[in-house]
Image (cartoon, rainbow, N blue to C red; front, side, top):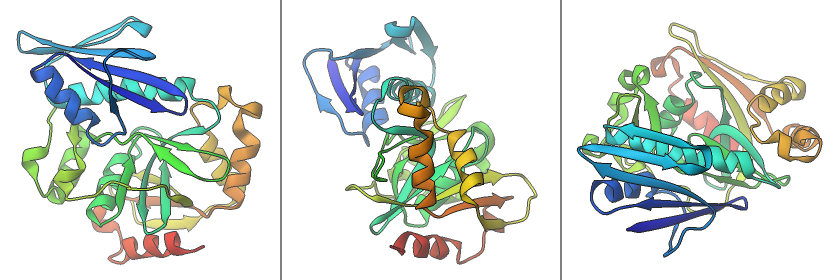
Length: 279
């Protein structure tokens, strides 16, 4: 029996897995996260079993049981439960449904609703040499300091074709029917190694056939978009609105519309690097 403790934003979650395939897929799911091996369960327990060529994920705190047949789907649902519990119970930080990458001392945060192309855009950024923090949940304090849940990048079925050419080590990809997990190693990428300072927000929107557009947003428009992706507002004073608006006023915000990676300018990653290098 193996147990890993995740302790983030005051939320403790223990992942428990028996030996064999359950343990191996749990190790893959948690390989990029800060975890501690423990002997006993602390906080919420997520249990993973394997029997008869099938995994079972159990979250008794929500009476949830899922039977899963492919490792990519196990990784997706296991990390999704971790994201859910951190976002549900975190206090003192702003949890945003957002990806985040970094270059140099600065970090870029990419808030977006599901289906907007957040994870595929993150995959492209990592392939361009940005270090990876998360593709799903970022935690920001009032001073703009970041933390995130560093799970393998999750690509839904309809997004796979767009990112296949970015994968350098396809043998590391974990396939699933619902989602495919891309460990950062398969993109020859690196993880964010130390705390970074928020330097910019980019709000992406992918639409097939759309032209490229990258434009500065007003504080009011950026604030509305950001609050739409603020997932623990109910836990914070004033729903976190004042603190988020203060952050927005001190952080450049941009909208990004694109119809595919081929529509991005050749120097677009350099443009983003320059934004992150600005004080």
